[in-house]
Amino acid sequence: ADACREAALTFVTDSKHWGKAELGMWLTATYAQVTRHASKPSEEKVWPVPLLRDIDPRLIERIMASAREEILDTLALIAKDGSASFVLRALIAGTVVRCEDGNGEPTWAPTGDATRLADRVLSLFAVDYLARPGDYESALFVCCTCKTVVFDEAARSRGACNHGLQHSALAPRRRSTLPYPPMGA
Image (cartoon, rainbow, N blue to C red; front, side, top):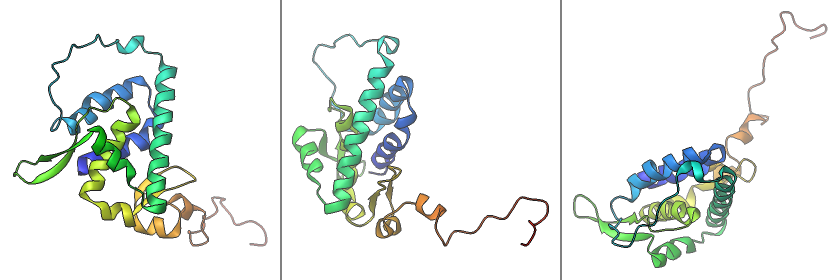
């Protein structure tokens, strides 16, 4: 669950600055690592995969932006009213399955079977939700200003992430960088 949360938050936080190479690295390294436990070897005919250089970077940017927006909307809905219907959709679609960990204990894992990028990332959040629903009920916060996703009860209760503290009346005042105080100060 920790690896799933970290991978999902990495996508939501960093993908706005990614290009196709970074997305490819995330899919083949980070995402592949967390889905390896429940992925089934495929016996279906493998279609030729286009080379990375053949994919239009603008298409990748649109796909990532659309996925990020859908993920943020889903997480904001959870934070607002506790709706976790995305978990049920992941279970029905088979992108999250019940399995056993290394100690034979029952747990959940993402399968890697999702075809849409948003569903892949949401499957990671679904595994995390199934392991720690309380974090989603009490600590999940999606900042409507900067679109940051945090698990922070204090941010949720004040309705702002840390950027809101930077301009707060409680924030320390900046000292003048002038060599001498201005006249009349």
